[in-house]
Image (cartoon, rainbow, N blue to C red; front, side, top):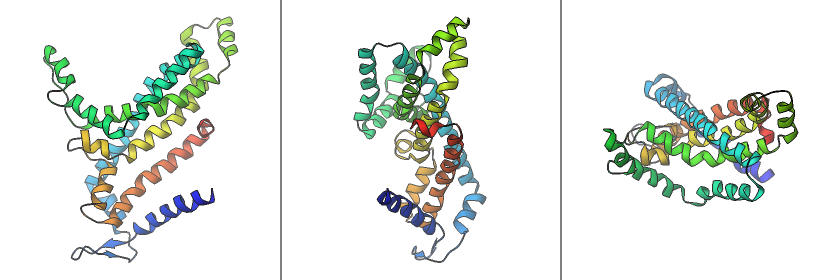
Length: 263
């Protein structure tokens, strides 16, 4: 824990200090003079506000999509499937994680290409592939992070006693009423726990956006571009503080739901 604290918190401290430096416009050298110009640019330049809003929107949509997809899968795994089928389903959920991130992202690039399977399926209906952009980015990221939502929700639903289902039925509740009044409230902390992964991973992603995003930019891309080609480390560090602040607020809100106990 001490090593983790030194390595992780020390890196965050260095990041925050670097964000208060600046870059010389003429030489490109980093000037170790403390200034708030980087944060002032983030607040006043429209494009950075747009990128921040876009990143938050994509992260929220990916989280909602994954929650909607994960809940019925996790419910079936936890309460319907036999023990043998349950083990097989857990393996099936984990199997995509064994494949390379790049392989999966480029597979979706092929899916959304002009001559890909989506275009082939849509052609008889007079439609076409949506191509690369915000929609492709959302779909790709929702696929990549779906296992991280399924597993916490599965663990949360598995802990719901079967006797509660029987008691609900004895009191005259139907399946949907039991689902709405018993299962979802008790599984909600687990859903929030899964959302921590999907939301944070989406906010920090930049590779999938490069592969399927087209001209779409997110915060991770701004950090990468300023750290790489522009070599503007102070501004890249300032941009990187946005996801940190957002996630600190998100974790504080999640803690109040008891979600952290499900991690």
